[in-house]
Length: 112
Image (cartoon, rainbow, N blue to C red; front, side):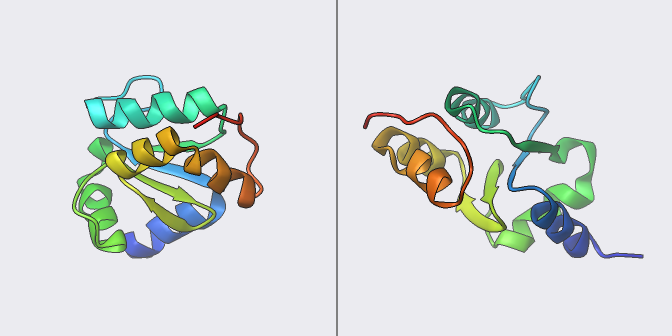
């Protein structure tokens, strides 16, 4: 049986954009996850939301995987981008849409 770290890596490798979050994209269960969902939806980015509340092993495992203590966590093309504060700052500066474009992921252009 695969370890939780293997399962997380597999999820990240299988999807170009993954948001590990509390709740689902349709129903975020915390304000920070909700902000990330709003930003990704605003940019029109296609992504997979992984509800860490549904599985305590994933909830702990993702923190160890990224060595980042908080959730949500955004991954783009296998790379850890950051949590809510970083995602929000990158969005506001225009850096996030640039990052998506450089990774070959379609999104709306946003003026900084």
